[in-house]
Structures are given as structure tokens and as C-alpha cells.
Length: 150
Image 1 (cartoon, helix red, strand yellow):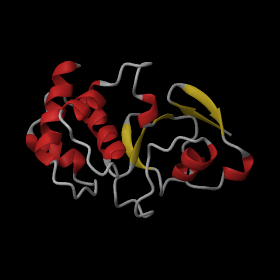
Image 2 (cartoon, helix red, strand yellow):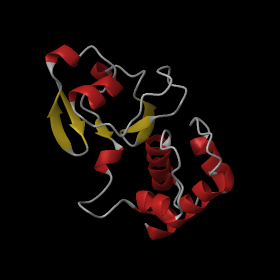
Image 3 (cartoon, one colour):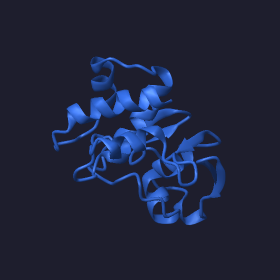
Image 4 (cartoon, helix red, strand yellow):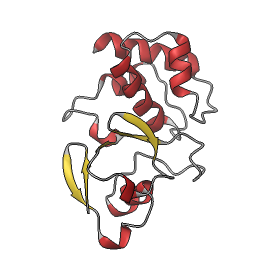
């Protein structure tokens, strides 16, 4: 079994092929950007599957098949951060870091669909992410900045 992961083919060891995508990413492949939060798909620690956010902790790795999988580790182009990552840093959005990968990946998907989203669209895209840091205003500013930079 192989994953099409961040533009590369990555083999999944046989002993991991019955596990969740999150376990395979973190434990078998060493990609720790997606976080284990609740383990029930409610926290929003997401990756993108064919460009749409999915909950990696409740998705069996076998269900991914040949579809394109993207993690936060695959966003940067060499040393150049993705515009969403850069906006997050420029506006000091991160605090605890728990929800950051999931939020960033969901914003990347949002900006691909809607380069200039409204506050309601931003809130809707991030509604499934469990974040208690209170940085929603900076998140909205970062989304707008990243959209303008694209």
C-alpha cells in the first residue's frame, strides 16, 4: 500500500495498514503536524484529501486509496512558507499550537474555493476546529492577508 502524500509516493508498512490515517502519518511516517486531540474527529486536527479537509483520526488509512493527501508539512515550497503559514506567523495567530495545523489546512482549502472569503465563510470553514485561545480576530486577519497574497 502506498499513499500519494504531499506530492510523493510513500509506502505504508504492512503492520500499519489497518490503523487510522493519523496514526500512520505520525507514527509510521514521522509527520507530526496533524495532532491527536480527541480521537473522535471532533477537534478538527485535519489534513486535506483531494483538497478537502478530513479528520485523520477517524479515517482508516486503507480508505485513502490513490487520492491526493496533503499535510501541513507539504505546504511550504522549500524554505518559503505557504501564504497561509506566513500570515499565521506575521499576525501572531498561534498560541498553544494544538489546532494550528487543522486550522491552516482548512484555510488553505477555503482560499482555494474562495480567495476573498467573508467573516461568515471563515467562521464556517473553521467551525469544526476546537480552539480555546481566543485568536479568532487574528485568524480572520490572517485569512484575508493570505488570500490577498495568493
